[in-house]
Length: 346
Image (cartoon, rainbow, N blue to C red; front, side, top):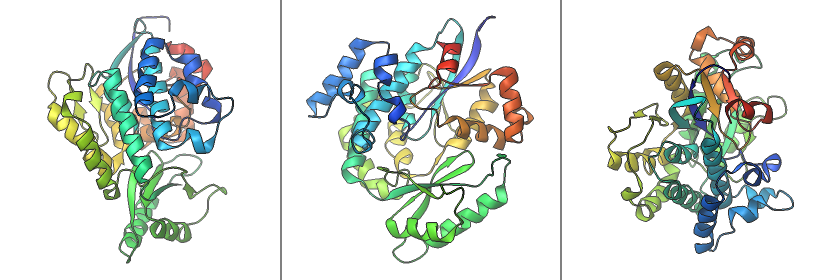
């Protein structure tokens, strides 16, 4: 980055982003050992394996590293560490948003919680969800390889979801609007019915998400209630930079109702559909940043961000080819999980 500051919206990833290639991410990138030690102390006090131990393991274990009580802490710490590593002399962070549990990370990045309190929120909610493990999630795309918007296909899929959810003993609900993907959640009967109702795509979809519960649906009401019992409104304060939540609502510095922020975070955010696509659209239209910076861990959220910008017709981009052209020209999207892109902002 050679001339002046560039404005940026920072995007925090959610569950499923700390995988085999991310093992050792905190060791490689986390910039504040004293802070990591504090996170480890919180884990030890709950008789949980420390992040340092998990991240420093000899080999990645799907069963061990993707459990909600472990994954949430690892992802939160990796995200916050990357946020703290951004060169503020070159980058002006104008807003923060996140996908799903990335909202907890966004709170800390934006200063609406302290790093330690943000970790408490993320670790507590990840642990509660793992203990309950209610329902499951799957992913299914409604755009093709060209990423061109297909509202008719999306609407047809949502009709199918509604029809299945109306059957006796079936629960199937929209969990996350994730660019050109629908993330659906429900009970086993609902998930199986959808898998039977739609065409298989590329031998991959519909794809079940391992160790994921029925996040962002009414099935998580017991988890939300426990979270509200355990996590005080005193953990939440005014953000330092604007935050865009899973409805596309903006929480402004010096103007946010912190009781409402607690209520949203441990209420609507847990039990209602999370519209990441809308959050990215609002980020683009309200803040018009030079860059969209996706923190680590992982590199899987880039496609969803690009698809969300296409769905919003941002800068006239209407397809994957148009996005790639814009990306080649302006470097609009920076994924900190990619070494060659990380260097642009660190």
